[in-house]
Length: 365
Image (cartoon, rainbow, N blue to C red; front, side, top):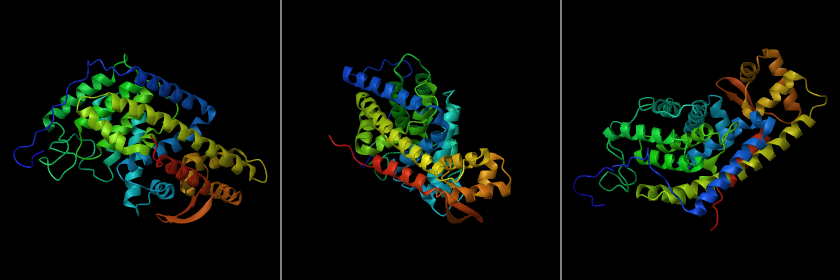
């Protein structure tokens, strides 16, 4: 694009009533990915509550890593406790809030809930921007709109564009994964916020999969699948801006399949850790100790205050249960956070880091 003269913002076509069609090969891939996602959600069974928080955390971290916000599981766990020593960890922790809001609000796909997701993402780091559609021009790539790779639509078109997108998302006559992929790409093309569009757009994917009934209990970490080939992901978004829907639908289906495989490995690792923890107790744990033990799989860094708040246990009971879990080898003292003693679950942290490492391995072919 020439660096002189006025920049031209995109005019995004309306999609509310479109008839999206993809090849038979991609349709088959979408069906396969849908079936695998349903199985992944179902196969966790009674343990879904145990894995839901870890999968949400993993999806949030992977989505942030796509934006070059890379944080280890330990730092992220401490940020969840309120530690703000790592700016990146605090930002990823905010993404967990956005993802959580996306799932909580999945029943109603609407503009107000998209704003709520964005508010959860930025209210701590950029409160002046949080939960508000942009009122100025933005661009992708380059130092100005004139040299940019892409200039999203004028700010006056954001509201109507989101309204059209919501109408498309609310339809029930399109395969869910196809609809979700197109919705995500349309959202990124509109680019409705000054910042946080990518992370909010990927949170919207989880919300839509829950809304369409593809998932019921957990969040499938689709971003971990995208992370294996971010170049292809960005190319697919670029192709969509040029009018091609096939690449983003194909990429989304493949990423979902990869995410399911990685998620299954994480679930297996966590089950093994849980069995080791329970086997480490000298006598069968009572109900209070069971509650404390289950919490380390949702919150791999904890304080006694967190345990008290989560379970209703007294201070003395909480400290006693932490001591027993520590003696079993499942918790390790890890200094202080905001003046409170803190512990980490090293094997849970290791399983989460292993998940992230697998997501970063680029696919071949």
